Length: 225
Image 1 (cartoon, rainbow, N blue to C red):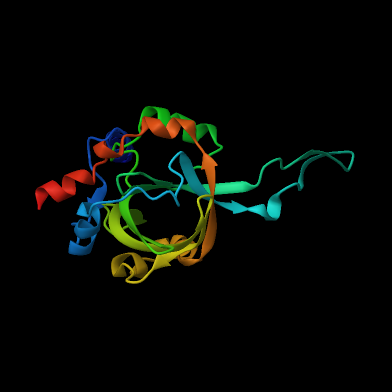
Image 2 (image 1 turned 135 degrees about the vertical axis):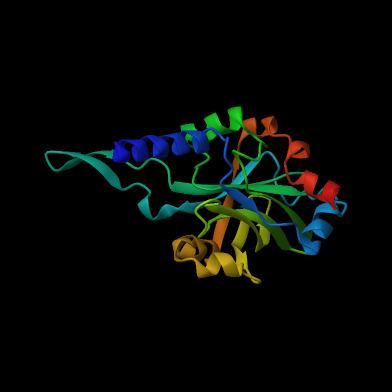
């Protein structure tokens, strides 16, 4: 009886958490540097392409066989592996979509349904361009030690070099790093990925226009100060 009750309560917690009745997300208070970058006036910069997103492309698997029949390849990888889309908007905001390829069915479904809502896209941030260097502070989701707030949204600093409107070179996480994220072992692999410089390439995404950056949840941060 007791074990059945425990299983039942566990299912209730999972159900409630899944549908948003209990928040498992802890959001860091906006820093002065974040608010300054967020509130600064942005000039239209044609070195970025706002008609889609930027992504890392792993060309190592491109054109390799995936299916065989009688030892003979019958199907090949038709497009390079892509991940972790990054978007820039004219109003100075940026957002990061972890784990969804711009070419995936899941990405299109997410874009059509959710857009700028906090519960479905936590990783909003702001950016600035100085010379050919682009800097950004983005709220990134990290695993937390807390059982109540299992995910923490922490401000993370990124930097890259604009080669042209289609390419951002050496994009990576830069200091200062978040100590609480660094100290938790479950973030180790993700942090290694973020810190590794990578080149991002532009891809046109017409449905990006469905996301209104003026409704992004981080806009409320400046109003609360």
